[in-house]
Image 1 (cartoon, helix red, strand yellow):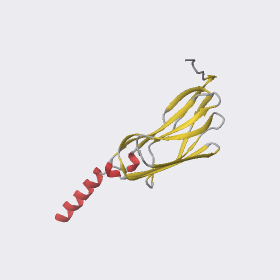
Image 2 (tube, one colour):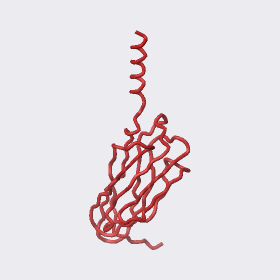
Image 3 (spheres, rainbow, N blue to C red):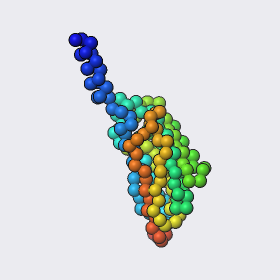
Image 4 (tube, rainbow, N blue to C red):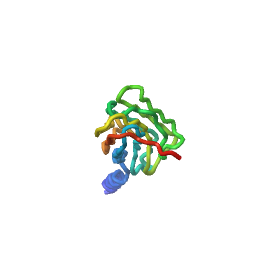
Length: 156
């Protein structure tokens, strides 16, 4: 009887532990004019301490006829972490980040900046998105709509 009780407790405990693959990754939807800077925020929702998330990485494919990669900025999650982004390949940005302690909460992992080059709708695509070593499955790719016209600066 004790053996069955122990097994039931272990099974119930395993159901309470959050699965790292349950974290939602959302790239958002954006609208810009030709010449604007498009800020793509890569957000993560519901990271809990028991998931022990200390790292993430992904590839992001984009249409280089519509967008040009400029740079990246640290998000509010994984502050003071080692963050790297390589946009040297046309149409691809590779991002990797690691921290020395587990992170928790919801917020921005990284902000990627692009220049809007030509009008049209373009879907960016995440590939090989991992948190720690787990492949993420709850992912929403970024979408960008670029309108004709050009960004204008106002005179002071």
